[in-house]
Image 1: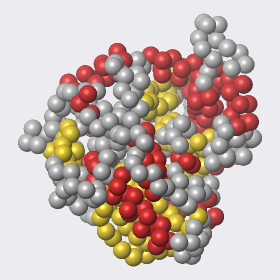
Image 2: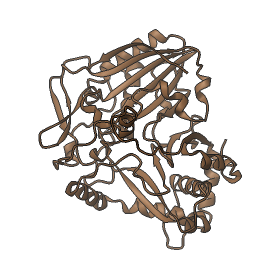
Image 3: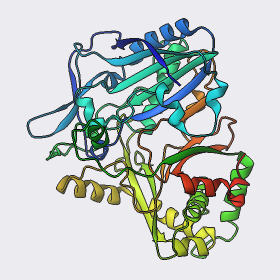
Image 4: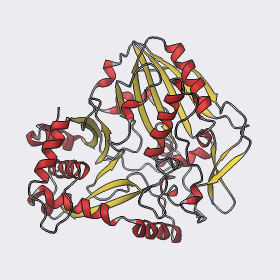
Length: 439
């Protein structure tokens, strides 16, 4: 697949806004050495030029409210990072491309995203590079019978909730609404107002990119990953949930949620596919939305990162030999314990000794869940229908990374986009109990 780039431009807010600045806060900084967060939405339609024109016009309008995405990162002499916007800045990068030999249906496959790589910008680009790059890059690729919209968002300035708030707002404007229905809450310092100085500064380039250019010592290459989307229907989710809840704990705790039930189902089957020893440790990580957990709570429209990683660790033997409610209970308790007090302690710990995380720092033998079935990914309609396919790009993927999306069929269906080492993925695909619950 060789996608041809046909043009590049930049889109700014449609009106002058002057200079704006907002400091990045403790919730943002752990992700500065992650990669840009990539999404791909695929639409049917034969009016490519009209679609691109409408998207650019709508983008200019929606950036009047979401102007931080049209800005840049800045670092002062103390090492404090902020997001800045000025009318003189270039704005959002928009790339136009052509791949007319690819159909919409070709991109609906459930297998690896490496084939989708050329449809999404900023592969291997770190968030810290937002100091000299746009914070949002959009690639609009003409397909045989539609349009592929590849997006790269700087994850140091927004999380998933904010990403889909922006996407929904952009779609509303393109669909004819005069203004955004829910304005972004842009003052990050209302949730945390501690100046954090990052010393040494975060890397300004992915070491793997540097080593490939011969400017650094070559690191050992990770074993190849395979990615696959496993589609769980509403009835499959109900079956998994009822099985996990069939023998409720005797301590009077709440029934296990859909998330906790599916999470333990995936965790148990993934460690089995990895053929680990019973004494090995395994970690389950979920990036939880903290908007309603902090004190005082923040609105859903809070624009930035308001997530924290919640870790659960146990021995492989305990997880696999006990019934599923054992693992579900571990996950449930870890999530419930992550209250305002725990969030405050995590923030203070980071502020005392800031640690720049790599995107792979999710724990040993991990299963790590990002995104959420709550995000309205299949509702993003710019005026020519809902997306046929929604996927993640190759960035921030490692062995055990899972992205959950609401299923296209709606209801309670869920798509799980899982990345595993090739051998483990092959065994997972052959796991009759696991695939029996998959469409």
